[in-house]
Image: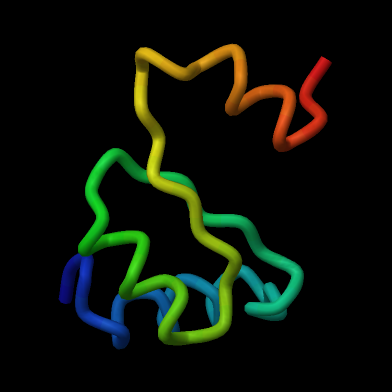
Length: 61
């Protein structure tokens, strides 16, 4: 299994005991983010040119 198949995200979440609604998934590919969102995670497409804005959105110091 691999991204963007939903079974991949479900497996990782289950193995790490993470509730999907409490997870944030970040990737540079829209299809991978979409796969994460399908299982209930919040997802963001990372764009290197907007890195500082992205950090602010996530409240990273």
